[in-house]
Image 1: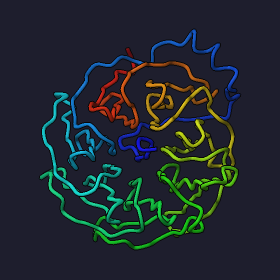
Image 2 (image 1 turned 30 degrees about the vertical axis):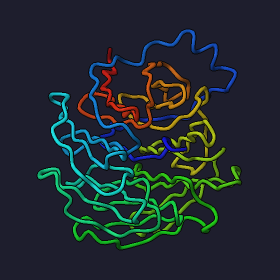
Image 3 (image 1 turned 90 degrees about the vertical axis):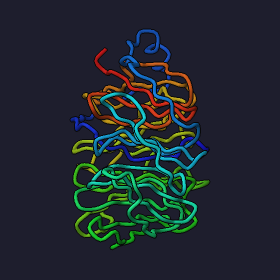
Amino acid sequence: MNRRRVGILSGLVGVACAVGVFATAKDAPARDAGLRPAGKVVARISIPVGYGGFAVGEGAVWAMGDAVSTLTRIDPSTNSVVARIPVEGGGEITAGDGAVWLSNPTNNTVSRIDPKTNEVTATIRVGPKPDVIAVSPGAVWAANAGGPSVSRIDPTTNMVVATIRTGPPPACCPHMGVGWGGGAVWAGVPRAGFPNLSSVVRINPITNAITARISVSGQQCSFLVADQRAVWAAGGHCSGIVTRLDPRTNKQTGIVKGEKSPIGLALAFGSLWVADLDAKRIDRVNIRTGRIAARLPVGGSPAHLAAGFGSIWVKDDAGQVLRINPRS
């Protein structure tokens, strides 16, 4: 699925989650009729058409377009494009630790871009087919779908200091997600042809050891987001569900249903936000009940979400970035 590749989001606002009564598939039609709007689109910014990662952080909004191998920089104060940076590859991006980080799955590298100069300052060789990237305090984590594994990069030296194997080579992966939250690194490990064996692994960032392997419902082929009380994993076209995990027990505690192809995720403004690619909408989910509380049709191909600068941001692979005021 060309448009469901995941990217880890920067600038997330922490929220608190609690285990609740989660939605079932039959609940969705009844809820849809009474859903309120999930905010208002206040800006549409044109960018190159094509798949690519998306992030908010380091003073800007960043959107990758693989059709022209260009990283677009958007100034959130003016909602305008201020730079177009030629780069190699066309993978996922994240922003943090003073840099923007771009995965290059075709040559097994991660590029570091300086947000002060808009220039690539380092190219770091990682594992096979790097996909999603996440930043934690003092480390950058690249999920290698061809491993499956996770490479830990030291941002002070731009070197890989650890490689964590997350499963056997045949196990993975059309795409592989990784995220940081709740004091741990989380990596989704889809199991091709074996949906009941799909898992999310928990990595201790101090020891680089896997401390838990959590079996999940269906394949988890899209974004992961996490905070102290919950980890949310999107299934994309692989399973069409969003799974909730409890980091205190390392167990699955619920499923958000009513989605067609949940791709992008963000935790912000007291809610979980979901980009549904096939339904062409953004859903706002109540983090206590797991029910869809609000919905915003946006059209196009909404694949990536990010939060920051008081807004929810959506990358539409059809060639635009949307800015949503969540309070409207």
